[in-house]
Image (tube, rainbow, N blue to C red; front, side, top):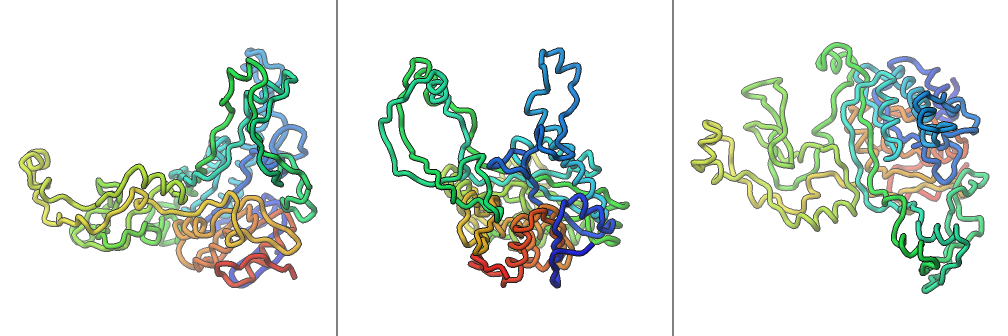
Length: 453
């Protein structure tokens, strides 16, 4: 299997991920970190379509069931006609990931909120254990909603009265074609004039202000693991996989001590988070390494709103409460625990400090979105620091990570930044060239607007 391009710590393959992974050695990678298609027909792109008549082997029309026939359907509802083939396809690539992963290797996969259930079921059906799910809250998405009142007027052939009008802007319209480089450059000359209109019919007036979709503000991430070979201890010692890098992904909390182990009294015992939202484990020794990593990740807008609602909080133990008669009656000897010392005033701020914060990139600027001089760019880009945090969470330094849907190469850049090796697979050749050029440049801010060789 000849790669499209390779370097010291990177191997890039051009082709369908199912075929490429089928040719890889079993149990050869430590983790899979990927952002696959969501099956939502993003901008009309063929790579994100999983409905009828698209010519993909995993997009065939599912068989009509007696239950559907009994409900009066003449054919399978569209959401099932697309959803089931998408799930079949996800199970197929997840099964190949299971094959190439070492025992205990983690799979992290982003999903869309409307198709998330299909993705998780497919990963589980492929043989993975679903260990958790993470939520990336960003709050800066754009709602793709039908204006019901305008639709009613349009169906009635009634022309709405324009009461305000903005300047014309160029924008991509769902269903627009990609150019020859595979990018979504706004080069089709179409303009959109933002307007405010008044209902033209009584029916439209009754439905003014109604729509069909919410503003997207989060994305789920599946956390799955290939079953262990034996116990956790046996697996990590034999294969170097099966555990999360907790200390490497703690949430920074300047000035606050955190409990980290049972080293003196109960070595090897499972540790549990503290009662407070900061997390951490009970111990006599203290460290300022940071809070236990949570399964909720924030974007800056979500963090700002959380802080606005919470106000300024102060963390720390309350020795007065623990020494009270009421507390002692309830908890007995625990009320006099010697390790309980006050830390009030050492850690304060909004509630967002309990979570890692990453920048959302619905419309990324040049600092985080690579683009070749010929215009080649990927339409969906994740923040590098988010991907680096995920890479660090599920692997040790020097590990080999696979991304079967490499896109613009963000996972690859994250791997290099974190001292990991990577295998990337991308089926679109212009994106492969983008990845190649991107990963040959120094890993630093502002590395984009690249010239292809």
